[in-house]
Length: 101
Image 1 (tube, rainbow, N blue to C red):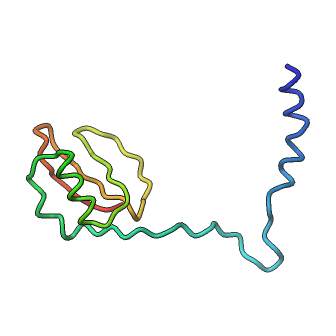
Image 2: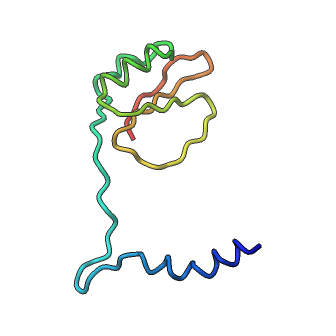
Image 3: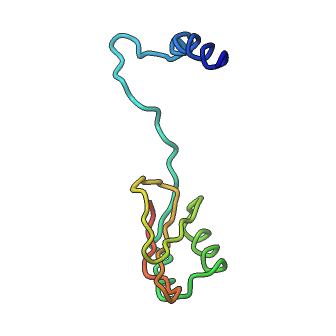
């Protein structure tokens, strides 16, 4: 209980650490680093079996820094990541779609 009261008392001080834009400077978010995913060269993998080996090949050939598998019925967030490759597959583990984002 004592720690909760202390945390509430210090909260306004922590808010003072945030930086505000200077006069005449627009509010903007910091730039995100850009990735280099390009799935054009791996479309030949469509119809192949989804496996660790195939995933490693796709990751290497797209230039992406991460791979997200899409099993049947999966629900994904809609966040776009320039350096990510998405590999969708069906119930038979057959790759059905490969795209960046």
